Amino acid sequence: MDPSCQAEACSLQTCLNKNTYSPEKCDDKVMRLYQCCMNMYKQGSEATSTACPKREVVERRLAKKGKR
Image 1 (cartoon, one colour):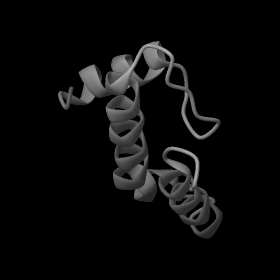
Image 2 (tube, one colour):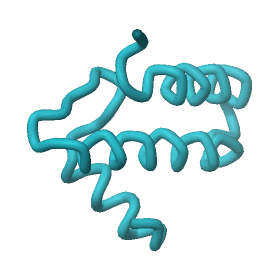
Image 3 (cartoon, rainbow, N blue to C red):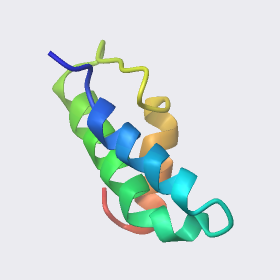
């Protein structure tokens, strides 16, 4: 089984590699990763993934975008 949110993180990395000078073109992929991470964090307080930033970072970003 793949680690949590690994597919979303890889998709984001691919997008960033293709859009080096326009990372804003990958905003949708960033949000998909953060949504995946938030879903993972909601499953349990011990949830972790190398593909995800810390829970506080995810919560702050989603709150900024109004998607929490």
